[in-house]
Length: 204
Image (cartoon, rainbow, N blue to C red; front, side):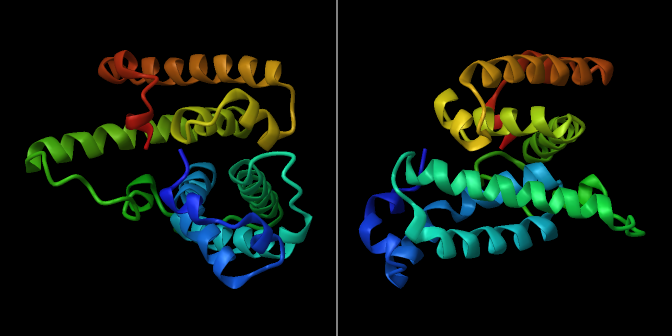
């Protein structure tokens, strides 16, 4: 669900590019947009750059927001499109040497809960890493729909609006994405994760 800051957004002022209204939008959706970008791009530095670009586009496009969808869905759509642009740019430029591996990408994450002890926390982090690596191996169209549903908890209608496709397509992609992820976990013999998936808490 959107942040509690979403309740403070004056849409009329936002459309007129009021600085305070725009700051409220950033506060409400920054963490969620970053999480979406991180999962799609699999690279923390790129995700940070994309989030900045996405919110610049949100600001520039504010007068064109007409409310035909919710503000959160509209922000997600812009962020998702910026992520797609970044992935297209990657294909046009040579691969960088010394690409960050999965462990390095995991260093920029939400803080761990302080409740579990060191051993439990380490096991939970390793579990999330295995699941995220399996998620990252999915083709983009399936990774996108799975993230928007299981991690961001968007409705089918909202996902359809973000991806600009029919709800039926969302449902079929989601079903296939779940099967593909389960197959990848099965190949890795990660039976515990297979039993727990789908779990939005594990993906976050």
